[in-house]
Length: 55
Image 1: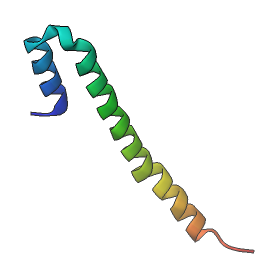
Image 2: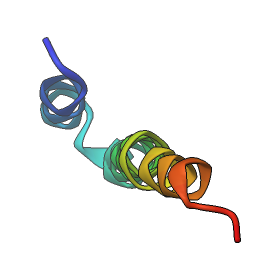
Image 3: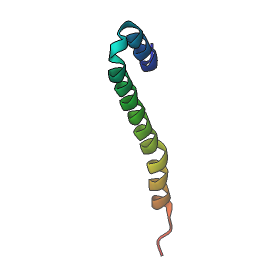
């Protein structure tokens, strides 16, 4: 079961905790976004700087 399914199940069991469940999802999405940036954008930028010809 992934995090989104767990949050939905938790919400169905405890509807009063919607804000907590939403915060968990927001935090999870932020972590995924940061991992994506580190893996794809910064790694490619470093590779470009490394291979750039020095004059």
